[in-house]
Image (cartoon, rainbow, N blue to C red; front, side, top):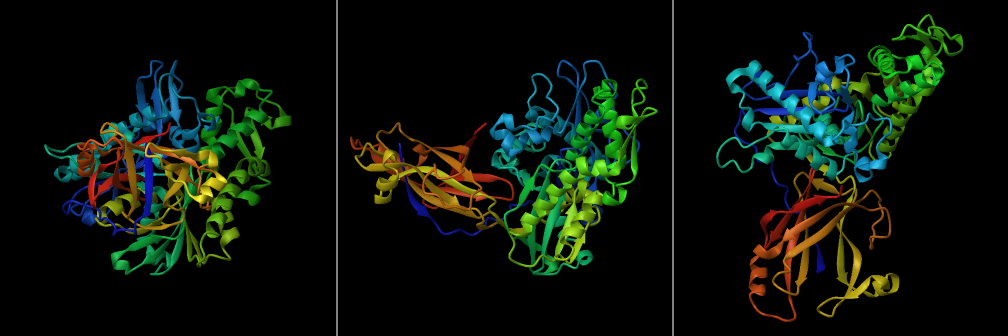
Length: 591
């Protein structure tokens, strides 16, 4: 099979979101590494203001978010979820599962050996995606019941738009797996006969983009006016995501545009917990009675719920922090701070071993993001659960306060993502007008050999069935890293496939990504990663059918276009023929 590229077309006009009637319900789900939340809204409910689910099974108290936690028995049957799973005591054979969202991180998806070894093992026979489906199913089933209780007959949840947030650093593979999991969990489904577009009611949105929409609606608080630039630092439990936006247009018709490629890393507050656990293991290495799973969980719960967010840093260096042992035996070893059944840890040791390595990583991420912008940053807004850390907030102020006028934690900063996603749905229009391609997307193609190919890569040159010298392993860029894309913009590239016979109707192309700024000619020139394969059946195209019906021992060519659409988080492909859509392209993601 020969694939010939004829170059890229000019950008086409952006496609508008096809929202349904006014009053339609929008539901957002922030599926977090450590905590998850649900918000919803409709123009017919509470004057169009976003509402959050606050009442959850397992507690009489109200919570804006609940633990992303599942409890299974030894046969793999789910026993509990959310608060009930997190608060469950030790049970014979039971397996408590947390942090499983991190298994969809790009490096982990590409190679299982890249999975953080500190993450808990999965239950026997379960994959990470199975746990995600189980949790989303429980969350959605309860959310539907609670929303119906709260707003009554207005709650048409079968036709609601659902907005699901994902980390900025996730690639299209992880986003597609999240979409598949959400559909398997029943977040959207056909509402009536003939409802063929029901899958389109599920929207995947990046976490910093959702948070930016929430923060941009608070413009008066942060003195943000048109043409002002602001950075979102979404510091959550598992990931920290960064993005920079400009406010454009009138505030009454809010619109923001992404200014540079977003970034993110696994350095959320969970990694404070993991480092604290390693510190306890080191201190108590000679006292194994205090290192069993229940004891470690007890230490970590105390740290997470009391010390983690209120720790002050250098001002606490001389303070002693006390952690009560779960087991009463072996109560004393002054050499490691074990006294009367308590482990006492100096503040400077906590700072050096637990806080500084993680906080410094966040500061480095912010620094790198500021260098991507060639304009002044007017505000740096911290959101997410980790933004509640007094030490992190103070270090950000100290490091960037002289360069950025406003550094703040907006109201509802811990739920900015879930509220912003719901606000996006309520707007019924694209609030983020343009995005920046976070990486390059390219195809591996075969092109007629040129002089440069004979000089540089003669080993790649083959003669095709038509007797033409073809250079394999060439790169055809669909979009380069850093390109400014209007929301819904379609990037089209024309191809020509050679078929020897009528049965040769399938076109398979490999889509690659690269984080490099270098423009490459060949696939072996730099760091490129196979994202997925595109499989396209050309047999339905009129030109293919016409050529295939005429006997021709020399074969024939079929010309067509592939369109690539990049949203805030997802990648979509479409087959185009003579300017008309001829169906979506099937993406076979590499796993």
